[in-house]
Image 1 (tube, helix red, strand yellow):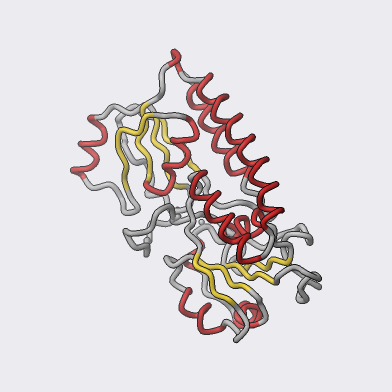
Image 2: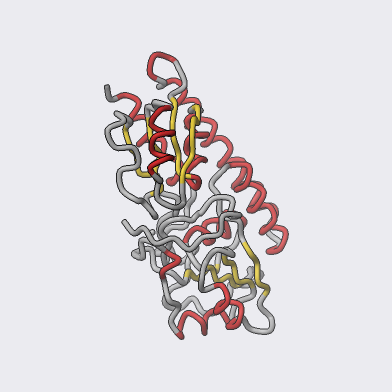
Length: 268
């Protein structure tokens, strides 16, 4: 969601950066495809720009969700909404988007008079996820569903975190350099972050500075990779995926990142 073009403000907290991929769902109960134009009784109709916003909406308790950007689009901000996408926006009760997305202005313009526009802070840091899911649940009137989701999420996150800490090489927290929008994965592993970079490509000065930190791992953003970040440093580079799949389930994002991290830590 590998392209190097970046159009993301520096003030963004975790592109997010951006991110990413995003996509339309296969599960009719969580994403809207054919025959999903009408909202379910008692549930709001929600249109989201990407699967990332969609996963937040689903976690908050929404059921009638339409995703605009197909998951096949590797870098979601490059997507140009079609007229049919904008027509769907006009019918929604809620329209969720991230402020860094360049098509946000089109989304706002297309929203119908009844639609409530909601900016979502996309960051997989668990505290920020919980805060955004809770906020959305308050808007949707689905607090009970969100509370149930949070209980399961917290338990799974704790399990993954403990499993990764048990896998630390030599029982010591690994040192990592992370792209600014994948810092959440370093936190998941309990890793020691010795430097960050991005979203722009690493400059020669940054390369020297970060290599001198001698990190064991480099956590790169799969959706906006700039290639090998620290060549000749000996650090293992991992691709971290921010965007959920078509099922709009956030937990596999953490499980997949944990699996990559555990594998890297176990490899000499």
